[in-house]
Image (cartoon, rainbow, N blue to C red):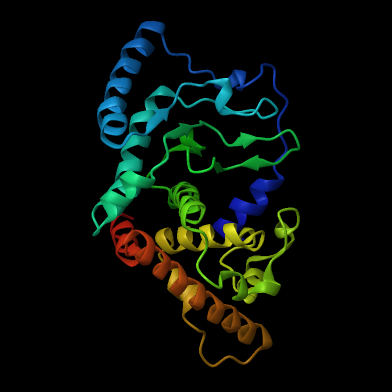
Length: 291
């Protein structure tokens, strides 16, 4: 099973463990002496104020506050010693790749959400599902699994980048709508928010989507393509370039799906250029150079 399949299907089925206290898991308390926490928090708060709030107008929330997570969900707060490495990760893979391309810094400053929330674990929902990340109308991005940070683990990196780029892409269609005729490229391929997880990666590709989750709505389709395009080193081989010498019906169907994805990728790249003047191919090149 592929990594993204694990992201959207296997994790979707994880059951919630029973909890002894609301909001966090008692066996994952921070257990840091009060004075050390205070001193370290002062340093972190100063760094965030200087590098994120003053510079970009985005507040990074790492201290657990109930209002950032719905009351019927359970989470583990981030450990203090992972916050600074996570801030560096955001700088390396989110801020700088956009800021280094033409018009990218202006785009980032004008579209970055007001808040980024760090959650130590995944978000465990009351129905037994988990959430890897959320965005709230362009105002907030919530990142999970911060306590598991490991920049040598590509699976962790890809999950984080998939969440960051996916949620950031939602801001594009919220402000500028979807590309023209987007809904007509693969209209029969969509499922619903309640049934997308019944598809396999293969079936999604044959329909013209990069993931089963992308089939759930037009907006999720758009965001998934942006995210996969930016972080997946094998994006072109998997989703764009046709297989040669097809001898099976499945191979033919995959190539038919790729034809739809070529249309979608062309539309996505044009949408960014026309509306914000940013070349996503250049952003991708900078992301890939950091992997």
